Image 1 (cartoon, rainbow, N blue to C red):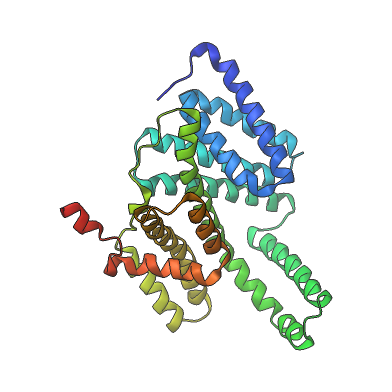
Image 2 (cartoon, one colour):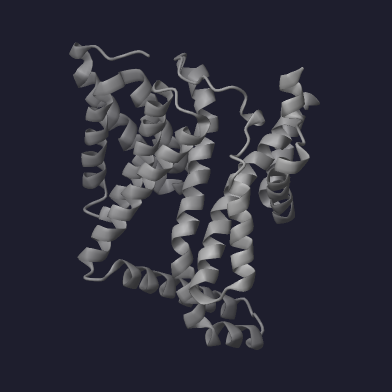
Amino acid sequence: MPQIENGESGKTIIFGILVTSVAVIVSNALPFICFLVLPQAGLFTRVRFGRYATVVCLAEIILIAILSNGILIDMFFLTGLFLMGYVMGESFRRRLSVELTVIFPTAVALLSYFFGLYFHAGQLNLGMVAFMEEYVGKNLELTLKVYESVGMSSESIQLFSDNFDRIRHDLVRLIPAITISLTLIMAWLNLLLSKSLQVISRLQFYDFRSLNQWKTPEHLVWLAIGCGLLLILSENGLRLMSISGLLVLMIVYFFQGIAIVAFYFEKKRFPRLLKIFMYSIIAVQQILLFFIIGLGFFDMWMNFRKLDRKEMN
């Protein structure tokens, strides 16, 4: 893997400052872009500049701290995205498995989010749970005002108001699972984009076999079944714990389900525009999302792609 020369360390710092400046400025106008721009910048930095990419990471953290005007939660969030790509590049260098190449960047990004939330709550003299309850409560109040402005029935508004505290309580307890799920999706999207980055940058670092043959570890199915039984039989805290587990596992099985879809798209040689159209429909249709998750879950027994038979042949 290419390494930067000692005399080019100044260029490394300049590159980091330019990339993060553009990424932060663009993310202010188009927030979704930062989920892809910053991780890909971190990945390219690690692959192109090797060990000296740590300097870029430090320059990136300092720059974001300046541009965010002391808003720690934004600084840690954007830094977590950059480090997600950096750790993904390190995973490529060490030739880790697909699973670890997604898990490690996800874990690093989550740690950055956690510290950002911790310090931000400390600035407000609140505990983390109290801070999240206050944040969720304000958003629920805004949601209630929106419902009233669009003319929702008084019965529905009253039902929402009567269960306000319970909804806030449940949402706060589900935030960790929701955050993990969204971060997994970001890591998965950046893993897919890394193949395009390799083509554009002409660097050799992406060496996985086709991801449309990927399968989840078989033992996870028993964890999913256990969470489902716990959801049916339990109440209160255990019920929320089981829902949290199912939320994360649904994302994992969605990855396997979409791999099955991609496998047959490639097998049937679908045109690129048709594949883009089909993926777009899957993204906006909730019923199709659950169908894809079901494909991934039942693939353990149905073996839709007949992968074992293919390997035997």
